Length: 370
Ligand SMILES: [Zn+2]
Image (cartoon, rainbow, N blue to C red; front, top):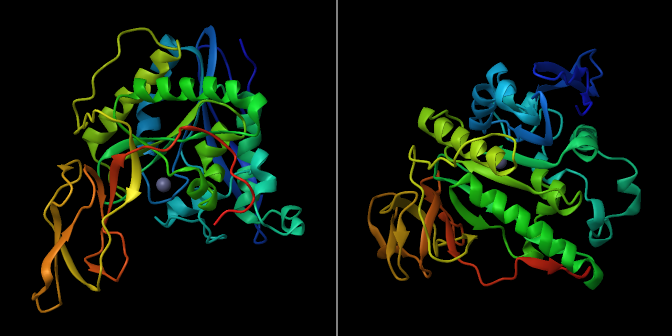
């Protein structure tokens, strides 16, 4: 069996073992520790990483890991599941997106790998990774050493449906294109096995500009070239038991796809799974044209048509602004609705899944990104 040692956790065939990665030494005498669970089967197979809670207020993945990664799993598993229930313990403690020692988005701080030259950063900064980057580098070193597949669990926002994100696969030059296409096919098959709505990530230039290649799964996929994806498991800050149940089914489906569990793929019936006929991509849409107070006319998961009103907009006295509606300019699906009732001009009021015309396997855009 594969020997795996992560922090002070060590894999043992047929057992679930536990431990911690010491990730940051605080000046006040406490050590930041990232928890690790290793479930190893008695038969050989791939090593699958499941990670959660890089954003501390996104909780469903923790429940999925606690319920799925058990002694019982080791009895039926071929290979090893490495689970990290929280990638960001201090953020979990304060139910906040970022760690207490670094306010930046932790899901943009994983190693930049082959994209290093694409960023317009002063060289000197790279020699001194900041605090959460130091934690991320340590965690990532274990992905690099052991992972064959990876899912990173998130929650989009309070009013959202579960969906998974299909990252575009980047390549450096024509000689690497074939490898990129192969990796993309694997990633897509893995996502389809999960069995929920899929949206591709933002198109190439925006992806780099938003540093999505430095997200947890973006870095695994695009720099380590390991099939990986982000699963957005619906509502953040709360645990919905049905979502946990459906997400465990999805994860088990992927483990079956990877040859690590036996049995047929199970359909997710615990929550809404829209079935579009075309590839969708994420898009912040529609946007408010003026400041005001909004109320939605649609629900997460609804299919909408171009020109359809999706929200009412009024002033604070309840009087209509303009014709009183915000319309969608695209056909598509409502993925997530804005949590705040107030909007300013240009604020997106939702995230939609709209038709994706952009290529899915793409060369790394040139340095000039604007
Ligand atoms: Zn997140």
